[in-house]
Image 1 (cartoon, rainbow, N blue to C red):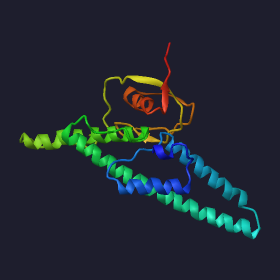
Image 2 (image 1 turned 45 degrees about the horizontal axis):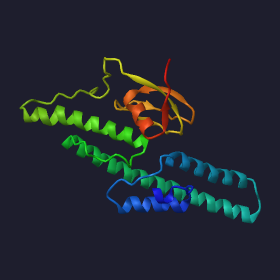
Image 3 (image 1 turned 90 degrees about the vertical axis):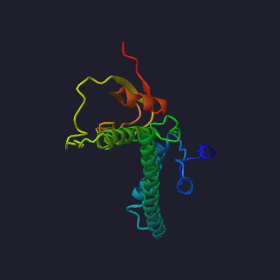
Length: 209
């Protein structure tokens, strides 16, 4: 989204972002601060509504209704944008699991989407191995209800990080929930997740003495 790099989020830019996502088969690049920018924009709109809440002025009432309608439209745009990007991420993860290719381009993913993508790849790869490969070897797949909830016995390596941007709630590779985190929050996260957040410049590592 280099073209809009210096432009704050507006209704028009959100509509343009969705339009590009709909027109292109590839995942479209967004600013790393997209989520926090959207939250700031929504907060500004909600503050406008709150300030007009008790006014009896007809103009203010009309502006309030206009803002409420715009908020509703914004949320519809965000939902469709999320749905379309989610579908692309799922298809990319399926291709990765099927081909085990290292040439899948992940540069357009937000940090949260990268974690989601890695989680999906693990799930699809594990199921493919346990079901398809078992069938090809003439074995009956054995999938228990706790197939994905069993925790690894070995201790995970972790990294202590400080968030430099707000990050919404997301899922880890074992479908565990992390966050949400705000700017300057400190957390000790699994190294693979921490590395993604650091690479996407959403967080920085804190060196422990």
